[in-house]
Image 1 (cartoon, rainbow, N blue to C red):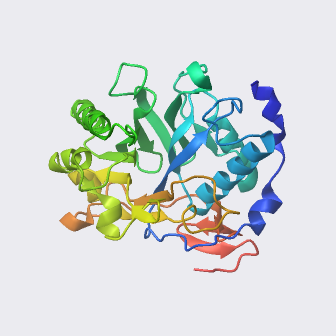
Image 2: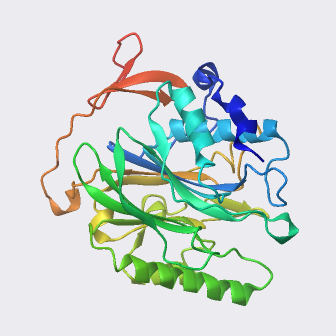
Length: 344
């Protein structure tokens, strides 16, 4: 399917965005300078002929794109780490186009990784993980890499460093999609264990900055061995840190947390909040676009309040935000209506 088929995505969506209101509570991650949203997009494919595509028509693809764009804007995401998208180097551009159109400014772009694949036997389209980011807030630093060299998990497990423009602070963000659970339970578990070990080996080689955040659909709960390997290596699960009852997925009526946010010690000190956003499990069919919930993390890089270090004072530029569907202006951390009245 050619990229030009989707040219209608450039339609201005601002009026739709202003009417968008969240059906569930938007998580409060505190007074954070940076916010990262995570999402398993459930087979977000441009190739609608693929056997694993979640959309049958262009209209369904546009609707799914719009829903995700509204959610990421509602979460005030400065970075979106996403998995289960088509393995090509421009699919994330459609989400960026929608977000920029709704936001009213060209601020969102994506990290290019030069990964492109074709349909395999049975019409299956390979999937990858990737990053969308606000270019006025952060800048990618260094190469976009993977713990793997083999084709299957190289696109699905990615590592990228980012620099916060306001402070120059760096951190490393790894977005992952571990082996899914299937009928071959023992074999699938052994692959997830391999995924975790490969990731830990790669992260040990990072020398640009000590702060590391691991995210993604890891297809295992905290109690299972793949996550325990990460925890035993010094990574703390942040979603359960802030909400012990956190869940991101419901299967046959059972809630479980299989999407994770794990931070090493220095990174955890700088996180202000981390919560799942139950837009897909509890938001209703008209808002649903995936079988996994989104999640959001707030952070203040350079501020280690638990150690009593001095906070870095930052004065961000004015920017427009969507809060519960209302367009507002943020100036130096204060929220104003478009008419200039202070809201909070």
